[in-house]
Amino acid sequence: MERSARACPSRSLETHYRYATMNLKNLARALRCGFRLKCPKCERGPLFHRRFSMLAQCPECGMKFEREHGYFVGAMYLNYGATVCIAFPGYFLFEAFTAIPFAFNLGGWGLFSALFPVFFYRYSRSLWLSFDYMFNPK
Ligand SMILES: [Zn+2]
Image (tube, rainbow, N blue to C red; front, side, top):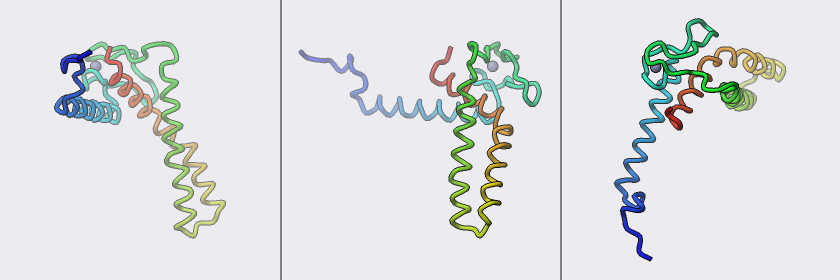
């Protein structure tokens, strides 16, 4: 059986390059919207109207932010993962390269682990929404 080049567009290097570039652009866009706390669809509408109060939908384009019940549980995982990825290596780096006593190092990173998720709450929700929109733009 002969397969045509049309049936499998991924054979072309140009196509590979185009898809890779497109994915990098989408990733950059998701990160930009995520860290700017903006709507991933229009990049203009704000996600929050107060510090911890998220809007139900975008005031600019009308995109519904909470797509289903429990949608932002993934944002909690993202927040937890970011906290662990900073605190865990941070503790060991301070332990290895500074003369900070064990209790202060552990206590400091414990305090960081309690406060950082509060700071990162909005960003984790925004990044979660942006990444979800990148993979499922509906
Ligand atoms: Zn919008």
